[in-house]
Length: 194
Image (cartoon, rainbow, N blue to C red):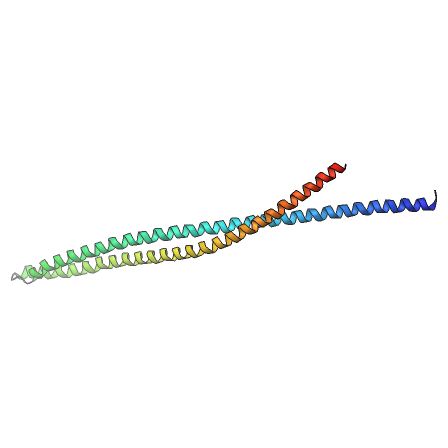
């Protein structure tokens, strides 16, 4: 064999080896790109799920806030009715005891004054209990309003974030699908050549 033929064989062999290395490098690059696209798609799906969870949390805050406000309003009405009844009953009892305390019978008058003092103590005690209920209802109303405000604010920001994350998910899905369809076309062309 002549040296020219050996040289040709050497060049053809090196070209074949070099081309196979290039093909493998290109395949590795495509795999890396495919994995990157897949991880981007998964991250976009996770972001959408997170934003949907935040939206649900905001909706539940709004629901709880509205429920607390309604309960507080109902409680305030009941407290107002109880306070009116307490004042009315106290005034009626006090009026009758005042008449008895001015009685000419000293025993009856002193008993009426003692009952009047007891009635005053009882009225203060009942009035304090109603005031405590009123404070609790006011606190419940404030908490309900706070939850409602937080829920509305959170819902607005979650809706905005969800809209953005859905757009990024659509874009990532489109890129992923495009890469898969181009890979399938290349694979089908390779099969036809063989």
